[in-house]
Length: 207
Image (tube, rainbow, N blue to C red):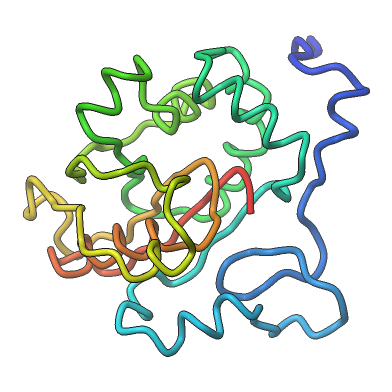
């Protein structure tokens, strides 16, 4: 069989920290220790929030280290679209393992799409050859990176489902690039569950 074309050199690949072994059972963060049922501090905080329970769990491919931040800056804010190909194989592999009814990329607002020229999450799915639906919509808000942790967790709902019939009784996997506080994914899951989805999990490149 022909070897697939390498899209990242060995040196750069070594700087990506793959998440494996013991992880948080809710958000997918790399954990230390031997307790496979462990839940991280972030998720313990979410457990006392009203929005907990909508998102079943998150699975992530890599830890969000300094090299990852540099890559995502090039991809999201400088438009280096080819970087998405670096994550195509690990994303496709984990997506297949999840085996859900419907895949939905986390949407960005129309204003943000005009600013960037593309939706970074849809780009990841295109290059991973994963089909998806776009039933979820997002109102325009201030960039998440400009908000404090407390502001992210306490923000009002800004997602809505355009066609509720399409998500009725479906097991859905949300795709996003980075899980930070989890606030955005929890909000998206809430909108989908209230629209009639059976369950919502998420898959991210970084945690």
